[in-house]
Length: 183
Image (cartoon, rainbow, N blue to C red):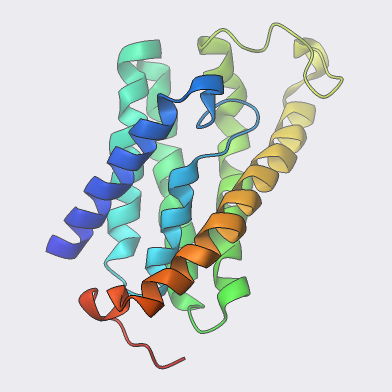
């Protein structure tokens, strides 16, 4: 339980820091939440499953004060996407590239389902995006969101997460997490 709490705190703090960066890297139609690289922790300990989900919920809850109760969509469903992705990562931990596909796919399929509502609440959606105007409809916005979220997640998880996993293994963080280095 303590491990999950530490993972939640680190993930939430890192996500909140990213959300404060210029160009809104952490939210919007194209998301590069650098904190998503931390999903690799689920390769080493099952405590990362609830820890990452709780960290996501805490970070996403920060939007409630900014845009109101509609942000609870992100708290609930964003955390669900993280939970499913982390479970997948732990389940397939012996196959790195497959394991890390879990967070990419979970976020790419779940987040775009509610993202247009959040973006509208944040003042986005009044301009065309990927050649679509706001009247194009939910399906077109969903499919565009699947593409853009998948691209951002892939870039962060494979581009930053894989080197982070290698570094964690080399510096014996795996042992500190109670994981096994037998791979």
